[in-house]
Image 1 (cartoon, rainbow, N blue to C red):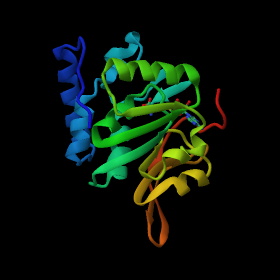
Image 2: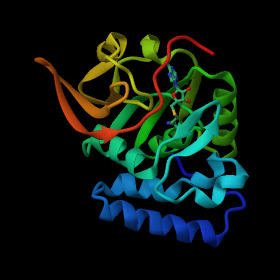
Image 3: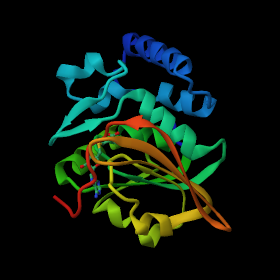
Image 4: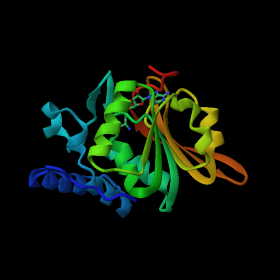
Length: 219
Ligand code: SAH
């Protein structure tokens, strides 16, 4: 777990963050560890200053390079489902983006591996996470569709970009007892959960979502 130091963050952001947590409860997020993690991470530090006043609204926000940071509800929901009330040791996030979700994940898991295919986004996320003293996120500049075989298996996997099918490499790298949460589809997307047990994989559909597409290769 990680303890965050909030450099230069005033009361205003703490107050708006508290309101965000109340809203997440109203939206049905129940996992107290996830709510505490969402409360601990200063979301406004991950977006451009010009839009930082929108950081605690329940909106997706632009992070450059035609990418977006998901709305707080979706971030919390995906982590709640992946965690399933368990202690998580090692997890994988595909699509670091600005690093916000990785910072939240860092509060609920011992080690977070996060992969991003757009170099400037990867570099900026590394800087932001360092500035916030989040030490348990290991970021890589790589095609996350391949996973990170050398670090597998993962107790949980979150994909922050929508694929048309589940990448086989990620299924292989999910630990027995673990859960993967990912958006699937092109125009119409649905959040899916894959659970792995000794017998194999079980898939369930959760809710309609809107994510940027998972793309192949590095950019
Ligand atoms: N979790 C992020 C959300 C970023 S949006 C955050 O908190 O900001 C999704 C990200 O997935 C984008 O940055 C996009 O570049 C990245 N992405 C898309 N396809 C990818 C791939 N194959 N490998 C790694 N990252 C990918």
